[in-house]
Amino acid sequence: MSGRDAIGLFNLVIIAAVLGAVSYAAFVLKPAEYDSQTLCLADAVPPHRVVVIDKTDLYSPTQADHIAGLILAERNALAVGERLSLYELNESGELRNTNRFSLCNPGAGEQVNPLYRNPERIQARYEALFAGPLDRALADLVTPKDAPSSPIIEALARLGLDPAFDRTVPGRRIVLVSDMLQNSEVFSVYGRRRAFEDRVPPVDEVAAAIRDTYGDSLRGVQLEIRLIPRENWEIEQRGILMDYWNAVFQQLGIRAYWADI
Image 1 (spheres, rainbow, N blue to C red):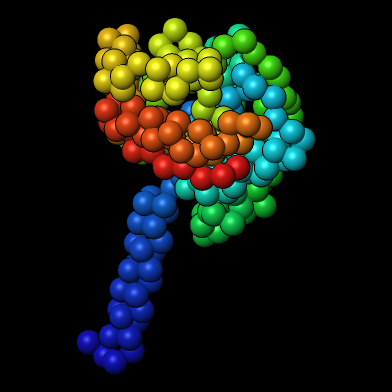
Image 2 (image 1 turned 180 degrees about the vertical axis):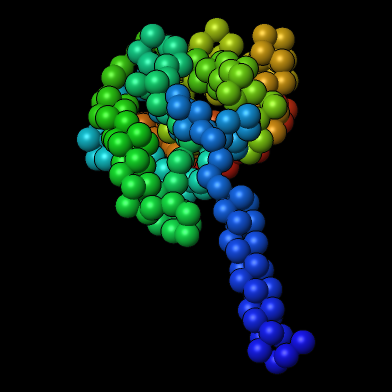
């Protein structure tokens, strides 16, 4: 074989290798199929974070702005494919999926590989199908309301039974914006003429009541409580009430931590 033939053969091998690598990359990096309703990867169960706004008590316009900012921060922290849902504990004491917003992050333009997807088109899709619906949901979600009852723990336990957020779902996380002033048949913090320990049942009774109705639906959930301070309640909210809730959460298998709104 002549030197020219050897060079030609070598070039053919290089070209074949490059074409093979390109074909392999195209196959491996081909975008996965998405569910058109949820924008989640088809045939996959994504990690799921839920923001729950307790609207059973009023909050100020400034607090509403902070809540909106909190939700946008949760959106921005989503990995591609991770699911975000918005719920409110409404004036009827029911947990409502706000504007039916429960979508996976399909990826913004900056989050996709430009080798096989057009960032500008992906960004336009992100704005139209994910960011836009979230903005519309926020308009109602942060509108203050008032309600006679506040079944906080029951609402969370019901959420844990939802097929999209049950114990088969990985990475379950709830961000709860609330004053944590529970008022339901399970227990109520009101009636302040009596000492706190005389107003509420023992922690194990509360946990047992929740498990009897909802099972262990919340076990393994990561719960971030963004506390809304209430006038004349702040000492209890940040003291004995917080301790009581933490004991309940521990018995229910919830990993809880607190922060200010």
